[in-house]
Length: 417
Ligand code: C2E
Ligand code: CA
Ligand code: CA
Image (tube, rainbow, N blue to C red):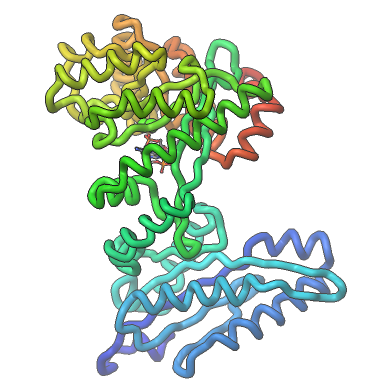
């Protein structure tokens, strides 16, 4: 690394540092013993060497951490490709001492000179990006610079891939519980769409906006709605459902005049009663043609479903209109919750929103609640529900079903602290 970062090298001078960490290696060591762990490292090292190109370098830094230098990079694409190959090569099944093992890597990528001029800096930043991969569900790679995550795949590639994913029904749903503060029980759940492309997590903000621009949102939105209603009806029949299932609508969906018919049709198809459905819209969707939007809301309400205003406080808010919206719930955006305990003023703003919503006969959900302190403060304000990592991240259906069955109580956690 020192040699490569030395100045005066002639072009092409870009290269990538891959920081590779094995997922759950400690568990293998602890459960099967260090002998098996050692052999696994040797075997992974052999796999990594095999995929190396002539000019590249791989090393073991220590423990279960490897690094790779991918030299002569003319495009970040190449680093992403190598990372995919690493995931594939490391992830194959290994037979070691009578055990069949699969180990996956999480990879962070930094680029010289964009992400650092010294070896130390490049390693540190690749390490940091590796943690992002772990956070996003392991067995994937992540670039240190956010824009490069997008660069590696062009927008067009993404659009083509998204079209295919929608056709193949490859967009999955995660469920995040909302907790009723009065009882401590799960009071409902929000559906969040998930897409991974070549083991890379693509954020819903990114692919929803691509779907909107590419004219795919109607199909995708319907797919999400149908899938979520079907799943929830299954939980209703099993006696597990608690509260309503909340589904996000994109602006394009909301503006579609056929929306009410579509929702009605999907409820009929899936057998879900409208009493179990809530739709989340943002204020920005209502800015244009407000009267028409309010009419659309009334139509939806007539079906028996409820409506929530999402991300409240982040955009345009008009109090004179807000009181005319037939909405049942107001969700306070997580940026307010995030700093609510920093200053009295921030805390007061949250309280003010809660009181305002109550005055307008709306329920309040506080989003992005991550700490017990935040939960306690919000409970004191008499908000109805909280949603956030404190209780649970968005999780796949199987896990959510287990959570529903276990019915954990948040109040016990609050009391214990
Ligand atoms: P949103 O509707 O505001 O969804 C809440 C976001 O906050 C989710 O991000 C969720 O994972 C995240 N979150 C929940 N609790 C916490 C917490 O305690 N701390 C932090 N830091 N974050 C938390 P996600 O899943 O990345 O979704 C982002 C946005 O993408 C959503 O924001 C929504 O606008 C959009 N989206 C997601 N799924 C769909 C969908 O099915 N349809 C449409 N139209 N939009 C969707
Ligand atoms: Ca939402
Ligand atoms: Ca939100």
